[in-house]
Image (cartoon, rainbow, N blue to C red; front, side, top):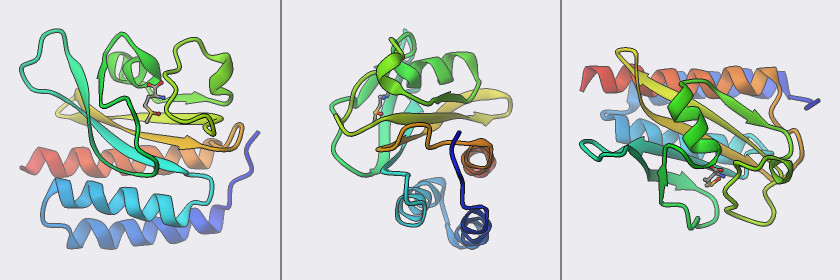
Length: 161
Ligand code: SME
């Protein structure tokens, strides 16, 4: 299992509070979250948001802001990838070894594990926070809490817009 630096998570949570109160829009908040998590959480090597495109049938996730290497997966249908799985089930998906998960859409050869947490607005999935790590099983219970917390902050902010 992953070892997580709990103190680091607490520090990052405080920074998140500050970001949340200082951001004027959901987009600003999302950008701030990608930078903060990528810089402060050593194993979070790619951090990005995918949002469901309004009015597209069948539904598709579109890459929003991100920190990390460029990805070829700018648009992901809901029946594809770890990203599609999280958005279509409304459940956080944690994959300890992406190379043994047939759903995985490769972004970088360095990626070893991934977590994707859905973002809800009034009970509906509107997007997700996706994080890749260059380390196997990088995402433990504390990471899951932190990532879901970030997704909730964005959902709450979107509800006000
Ligand atoms: N690996 C994801 C695709 C997005 S990249 O990680 C940035 C997936 O399997 O859905």
